Amino acid sequence: MFEQKLIKIGESELMANIKKCPYCNGIPKVKKTLIKFIENDIDKYYVECTDCGAATIQYDTYFGYSVSGGKFRVLSEKEAIGLAVADWNNRRFNSYTKLLHMSYKDKVIWQIRSLLADAWYGAMVPTDSPEWRTGWELRKVAETKKLLVLHSDINYDMSEVARILFNDIQVKDIIFGYLETVNNMNLEPDEIREWNYCFNRFIEGEEYIKPSIRDRISNMLMKIGM
Ligand SMILES: [Zn+2]
Image 1 (cartoon, protein in one colour):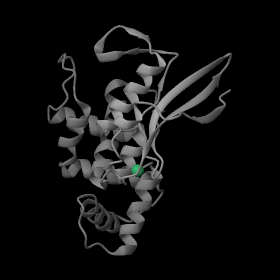
Image 2 (cartoon, helix red, strand yellow):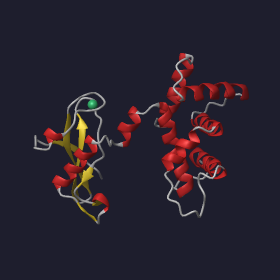
Image 3 (cartoon, helix red, strand yellow):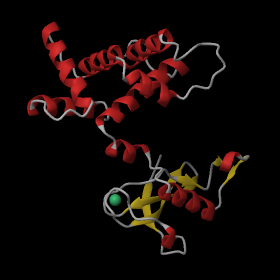
Image 4 (tube, protein in one colour):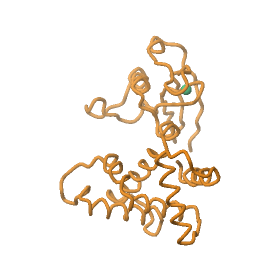
């Protein structure tokens, strides 16, 4: 149903105002991509570094957006490009770019936030999945610590809650258990303790971990998209 092709936009007066890539000092370009959606062509605009591929999210001129909290409306081409350029200059990148450049600690916090949000907001996750079970375990810890309170009418900042939870040793155990399940490791209890210890040091940025274990933890995290 989707057909995507990339069209480069020529130099415009906007180009001069785009900052260099903060990751590689490369030259970013405004790009346009066309998506065929059933009967319609949807134009999407974004900024991407031509050297390392760092990119903003894509803004289309088809669906409604609320610009600066205003009413939802369709953007003009110039507005869509303007939003993408503003994102780039203010270092607001797409999720893929953000994840690629995060420390392992921030990636784990990101994962905690995502699992917790599924359990708190009730996402459509299969109830027997490791994601569901882990999300609920995290939710229980957050509720016990009064970081999340049902019927409190508070609009929680899940990233902040995840950041606080990350410092809880019980939460690190939960996340390690999740990784173990997803990676089908089937460790013995003694091994679990050792691996968990290495995992916790690894995500805290500890340098001195056996390379074989360090690489394996890194692969485990990659498997869940981190
Ligand atoms: Zn770059």
